[in-house]
Image 1: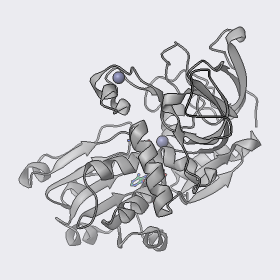
Image 2 (image 1 turned 45 degrees about the vertical axis):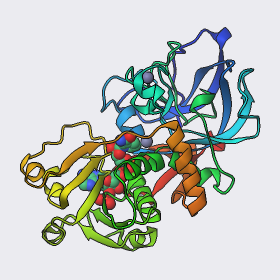
Image 3 (image 1 turned 90 degrees about the horizontal axis):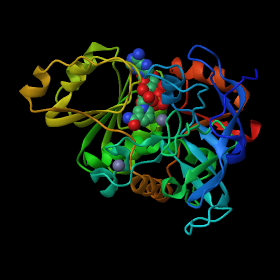
Length: 360
Ligand code: NAP
Ligand code: ZN
Ligand code: ZN
């Protein structure tokens, strides 16, 4: 792995050095680098990162697909680790605790949504785990790193029943699918379809099944059919087959679209019942054109959803521990990250790569 020169965001006296893997530019491969992190403040926790999941968002972000990036980009927002130190004001975590950090590390804490416990929708914009300017003016760096320092309010507890490696992907893929499934009332008597069987998709299948819904996977092909049924799906269809759209017309209460690229949304809307909802969690950079007719003819909704709150993330982790749910993972060393990204882009992952951060 190549060493990349970096610029530091804090004066040396205020910062600690962290080993990391990141991208120096949108079109460059990831390489080893050093970053500076703030010292542990009174409300902070220092976490030694044991595992970090590889989300498709890491790729969109680091390659500049979503807009400006403060390079070097150090992605990673599926962080599982052990508390190494706590600030003087932190009372509910102690060194040795098993903890997680997801996609956000701060918010304004005073807007209507923050006060309602929905800080992922902070009206001033939440601070993302990587690539954001934090409230103290520093750039945030993610979990492809040996440690991270995070405000305790944005840290969750990983239940004892969950191993850290399979828990890591729950911090993004888990909560991003759990939240809309809950919000749109997935459960017994509800037919839920999941579009795309990748990192988010496989968690959506497991979670919707555990909630008691009837679950259908809509994948590009039948290549992963056996896996899908083992994960908890009741049915599995290929979207490359036109007959799928005829056979399943008007069938679903809820469709969760996890696809990372643009798809023909209008076609999928016709699979909803009257009053059904298609919720987009996939985040392709380009707009998705939508014909209004499938929407208005059956009063259907096309919606979006972003991660989940800290409270709901803890609820999701507890739900997973209670139901024996975790991610299906392939553990990689930090040196294998570029190859892993290529496999994510080729939809060749079953179903989440997780970095063993001891290899950094
Ligand atoms: P992933 O593991 O790559 O899974 C995406 C899946 O979509 C693939 O496995 C594939 O499933 C399908 N797919 C990929 N390209 C496709 C294409 N051109 N046409 C049709 N289907 C295609 O990605 P992920 O980590 O689950 O993330 C999925 C998306 O969610 C990304 O855009 C990511 O940025 C976004 N995301 C959003 C949030 C949020 O808060 N809303 C949070 C996390 C991630 P099949 O092989 O089964 O077809
Ligand atoms: Zn993610
Ligand atoms: Zn706010």
